[in-house]
Image: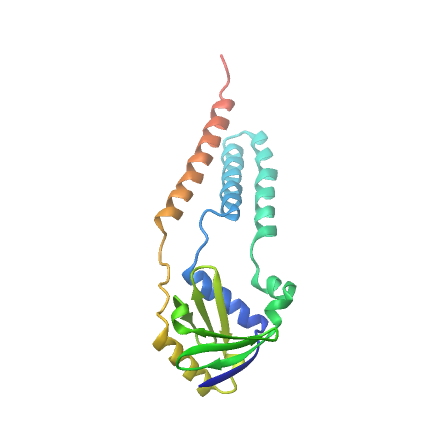
Length: 199
């Protein structure tokens, strides 16, 4: 039985997000689209300008707009941690051989290990998954000593499977990326043929 108590620090949450991204990658997001279009418009501007067509620089504002939208909508864990007060709430409870016991917001819960589908951990943080949407976040700072932290990690590792990390590019992500490339190619071809003088 190991007791934990404390709140996630900003650095803890950054590490938690990094761990989550090792396991779950959101493919085909709006951010991906804006990056692809930003690069595409930049290529169009550069291609036309080097080919002696200064009017192609009109593509640059579209490129900058795409990158600005991506920058505005990107997920920044530090900003999210500062904005969401719930992420700074105190976590407290026990890690036992049978379950995770937690008290959050004045409510006591006891969650058997079988409820969790997988976990992923680093030297300073641990993330428990129940499907792809529900996460329980733990960090080294919540435990009094290194021994308590290592014992908690060992207990969880024995009872909850290790999450399978994503490596490379998934087929779905590859198809979505290919779709954006084809769309950009169509835009480029339409622009290219529009530059050909009509006889």
